Length: 341
Image 1 (cartoon, helix red, strand yellow):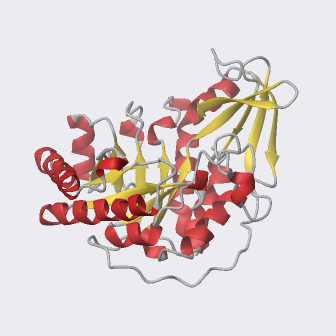
Image 2 (cartoon, one colour; image 1 turned 135 degrees about the vertical axis):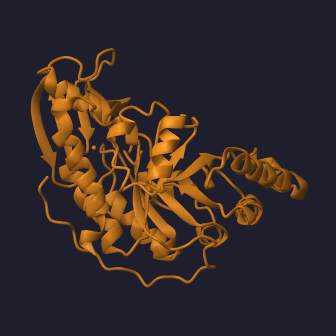
Image 3 (cartoon, rainbow, N blue to C red; image 1 turned 90 degrees about the vertical axis):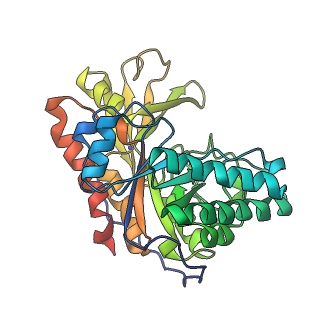
């Protein structure tokens, strides 16, 4: 959030999994943060799935229907202690199905991001996916599961093969991979993949290759960030939180940027600002991705034969008329994901 060649890596042999309940058509899964900013400008012909926590307005729903975009609502997983209870799992699955039926959705997604699951809880999480998939099947609806950027992200190590077999696909959250969030990066990585970048090409590549050792490529969708990370430099850089891509563009518009560069190891961009890059945030440096850097990163999905790509968040693009070229370029980076196959 570079004009560089895509790094070359070997593709592991796919691992067979249980067949999907849904079809195997390519996926472009767009997550919205809830603002729906600029929804009229989104490339609705490219998006196949729209994921949300805040339900869309009638106007958004009308555009989705017109373009055949599937609507996926968050079905918040219950407390992990309840996963072991068969009746509570059944109630949860029924609740997800009731939500889909009532609002005419096309599916749900799980966004559980907890750590420290024991083996019984990992097995029960798979059962939760199986039972929710079964509850949604009569409605012709499916389940997607969000997973970390690498299987070992923050020591999660879920039963990914089981989850993939139980649901339609896994959405790899190829973001929040900067070493100040992925605090286990140094201890769980092979080689130098850790970086201040939100989505370093090294970490993304490691994540995709590691998932492919457990899950068939047709069950994986690679999501990338449309936001970056703010840093305050004292002695060492201090992470100051996220910045939307549209606010990075605004920093350029306001003449705040004093220096811009590419980081060759992460294939990400860096800007230094006069004062704060984002108003109200004490941070003068940003690591981010744009259309140049996202192209080869989305290309990892094409190179490894994944089912598709996605982004978080689709409402992070600048909406001003004079930035139409930026929006076009960002969508072109998404659409070009299969060009690297």
